[in-house]
Amino acid sequence: RVVIGVLALQGAVSEHIKMVTACGVTPRSVKTQADLKGLDGLTIPGGESTTIRKLLVREQMLEPLKKLVQQGFPVFGTCAGLVLLAQPDLLNGLKGTVVRNGFGRQRESFETELTVKGWSKPYHGIFIRAPYLSEVQQPAEALVTLADGRIVAAQQNHVLVTSFHPELTGDTRFHRYFVEKMI
Ligand code: GLN
Image (cartoon, rainbow, N blue to C red; front, top):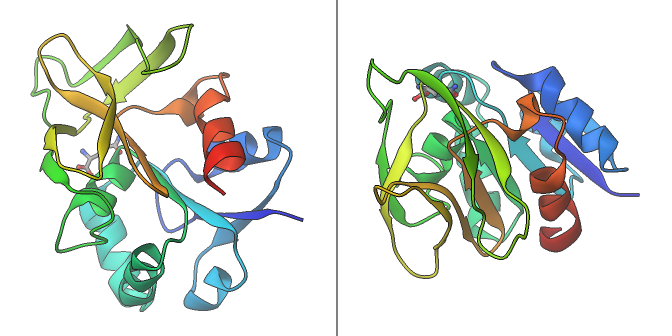
């Protein structure tokens, strides 16, 4: 039985739980350090990365989670989850430069079709005050790069990040990719 945790401190938690369930694996809400035990992987939802960071510190989960990520534990972060995973002073799971709220006020929220490396059909990207990566370094690899060069999805071995919110679409391909190829 594969059990995937969904970090449930703040943000789009129930949407991730739905996606994980739709992929045929068992979800678990992760609210405390004890909830991290025995998981096969974890998703970190969108929300507010500064709030999630504070709650991770309060629940004494930041260091244990960072250690797990360093040991090869599979984690999928969306939006605020990307910020937490890619910041070297936070979870440090993916080498790259994060630009928070990188699309500015004019384009705070928008939707667009994305071309994903190696996928034949486009993916509908929903961006909400989204971050992006201005560059990634080996072994991290860009999966979606916008026409202007902004990287909005990337992978580094067992770490997957998207600037956009797959959990807000009905398209399970990103969660399936995580569950089927990275666990
Ligand atoms: N702007 C948020 C942050 O930097 C992310 C927004 C989101 O997750 N929708 O934490």
